[in-house]
Image 1: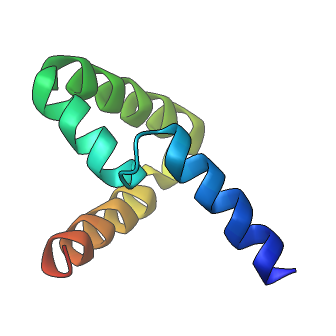
Image 2: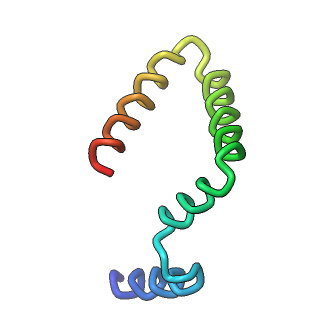
Amino acid sequence: MITWLERLYEKLWRKVGGKPWTEIIRDEQKQSPLVFLLIFLGLGILVGKLAGKYWWQILLGFLLGILCGHFWW
């Protein structure tokens, strides 16, 4: 099962140019930061609307995720 998954990942890796998807997204974000800012703003508003009165719990979760991401980047 794992070798099958490894082969699939290798095929995908070669199709996207031999770079991890995080690097591809980072390069795209550096080229057009406003687009990504608007996307994340829209997603944040959507999540806030869907969350209703529990929006602060989701906000706290995102904050912890951002902190962890910056510490271990």
